[in-house]
Amino acid sequence: MSWLSGWLHELILVVLMAAFVEMLLPSKSMERYARLVLSLLVLLTMLNPIVSMLKGDASKELSLAMEQQERNGGLLSGAGDGADSLEKILADGRMLAEGARDQSLKLAAEEIAGQMRDQIAGSTGIRGVNVTVKLGMGPNPSAPLGEDVPLISSVTVDLPAAGAVAASGSPGSGTGSPPAANPASGPIRITPVEPVQVSLDNDGAASEGSDASAGVSPSSAAGNGAQEAPADAEAESIIKLLEQNWNLDPDLINVLSGGANAVKS
Amino acid sequence: MEIIQVVGIGILSTVLILVLKEQKPMFAFLLATATGILIFLFLIGKIGTILGTLERVAESSGMEMIYIKTVFKIIGISYIAEFGAQIVRDAGQESIASKIELAGKVLIMVLAVPIISIIIETVMKLLPA
Image (cartoon, rainbow over all chains, first blue to last red):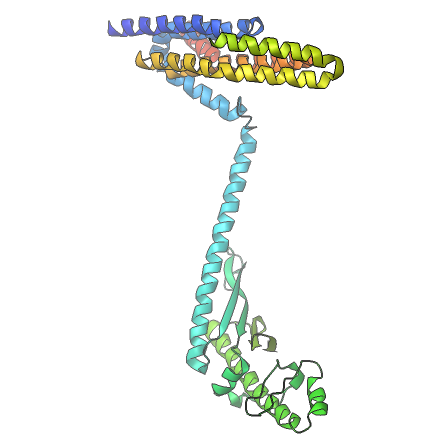
């Protein structure tokens, strides 16, 4: 008999609440509609034992139906169509996945750059090299029909300042690099030996310097050429090293000297 | 003695609106809207007390919360629709006010759809095939 008392309990409460809420309504125009919903609630409460016998718990069914309706129609929240929200969720998921992929590519690029820096330091003896690696997604060269894999799209090796390069020696000087490349392509250099410091600008600086101070210019020009050759040789050796170790296309490797000009690319 | 405050605010704003209406009808409308919002905000706390009591009683007596939620939604929709419609009606736009009321009625009817569907399904199962 406990179910009977519970049922009566609930029925009385719902009827009382309906009467109370009807008084709480603001105007007569809404009253008919509100009364309809309230009477349906009373009816559902009365039918509760039968509904429970046939379908399961009535209140659970009702809450499920309400939730579904809100999800589909967006009754009070204005959430829009179900299909729209599904597309939005999928788009959000794609965006999140792309963000995660970009982040992992960035991490991998940093890791590769660190390894390249160690290798360059180990084989050529140059310290303080700044290596920047850019990764991009591309088709796998060994399996062209497979899914995209991360590939190295460019490597930029930034050699330390000219003095450090010259002091570090040139282990790869026998690679047959052209002696005395264009002096104008070198960065601003300061000759440390001379008592008078002479600086050379990029464009036509050598000729201007020779006009202004004839005593200093030949030695500085010669020094420039002598520094340029080892830097070029360094670049060659670094490119060869990275090409062998990482199986890279030499066109992708870009070596900058002194952080300003491209020595070899 | 809150009712005296409400009536006082109402009478004061009515006098002001009557004075303003001759000079600036726009400001009179704004004043009427502001007064309406003020009184509504004043009452919202009281309505909240009543609904809170209802909810507590229903919870303690083991009533299903989905019924209470449905009833609260009805009350909310009807109050908001009525308030908006009255403001618009004050501004003289009777047709828009009736559209707002229509929207409130339709939204209340939408709340009835899941209940009706459950009742109808139960009745159909009771009937012999």
